[in-house]
Length: 305
Image (cartoon, rainbow, N blue to C red; front, side, top):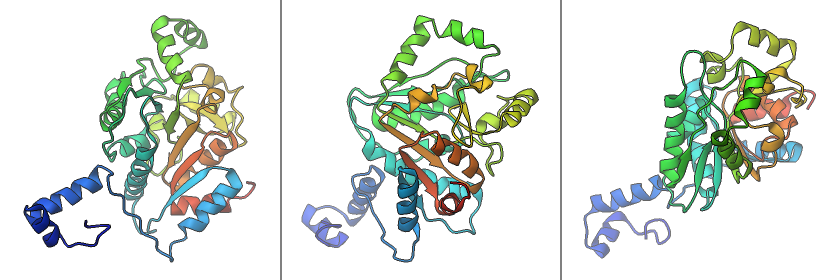
């Protein structure tokens, strides 16, 4: 009545024999739950042309979020997170297995998800979250819980550290039946949602600021010309990753496996993550990309791409 028939709230209230305030609450609920989605087509926005250029150059579906250059990094992240949550919702179907990474970006996205009923869907953690200072369970589980509640899905946590001290320990753990069950879920993922980690982000990536990497690890990453990570699996600017020693200890999904997931949604906020994003694109990791306008401009203008 309101959006398609152009009736006023007073007219709707009279027809439904209710109050105007009830109609207002119903309209708000429709927006909050995703029943109604509002799109603004502003001819002055450059987002569509940037989206087309990113799609042409990198072969991914791009969603560029127009953001003023005057806002702070945290405000940019919040607006990108809102757009990401609204984009992800319609893509999650029943019987889905959705892999979710943890991190600053996904934490922000999880706070803006709108409810959608699905049947027999599963949210599975992509990588372990423990380190020498914390189990990481509280941090990662809160992100997963929000995704599970939003879509009425089961949540499968991955209670292992982000990195083992020794590659041999990972090999032994990957033979345990309790771990194999999670790995098999990851192999059947229909969607994966992740951010891109970077050592130089305006809002530090959690894997770099949360005590997961010591000085020796950071020196090794620099020596091996690493530019970023997805779910604690690292790569160089050209997308190469198989020979990186730290990946042998990481509990994140093998990037070759990740590329087999039909839908891979990457959410990026901040120009300082461009080098990491370029590496992720070179590795062929995202199928869908959600990012702010300034980052999109840097991406299409970056040299050597």
